[in-house]
Structure formats: structure tokens, C-alpha cells
Image (tube, rainbow, N blue to C red; front, side, top):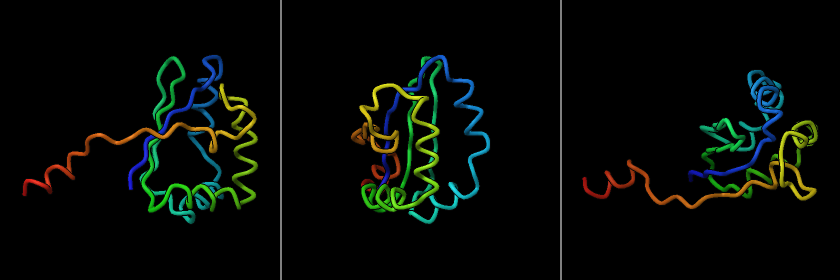
Length: 112
């Protein structure tokens, strides 16, 4: 399954947010991999709109696996001040998942 999500980074924190993601902690990277997150990427617009994409078998299960790790709790606590609109939850619990309406490979398979 492919998932796309949105978050809003504070415009005054964009440079630091980019900097932090140039060298994500190795234990955080390993936890994501072990929790089943694949092909995970983040894209940041100049106004702070953050678009994420991840592939995993089950997003809720992958999020639950991450929530059970200490490294994720530490990472989310450090990242929370970068975002707006979290309503007291961590960034990983606050993103808005978008509906996929088109996928090239899926459509190509249908006509093959």
C-alpha cells in the first residue's frame, strides 16, 4: 500500500527542519525499517507544506510499531515544535492521509 500525507512545518523553522533530516538518527532509521516503512520520503514546499509518501503493508500497524519504540518517542518530541496544528499529539499521529486517485503502474497493469 502507498500512503501520502500532509503536515505543516512552521515557516520560520524550515531551514532547521531540512538540516535535521539530512542526518536522521541511525536508530530512528532502523526503527522505521523494522516497523515496515518502505520507500519513505518527505517533500517540503517553501511555505512549510510537508508532503510525505510511504509504502507499508498496513499504515496503522506501522505507526503502532513505531509508537512502541523509545527512539520514536524521542524523535517526535524533538520534531513537534517544528509543526503547527498538532493539537497536543505528535507529528506522527497528526498527519492527514490523502486518498490515492491515480497510480500509473496500477492503470498500466489493467490494460496489459
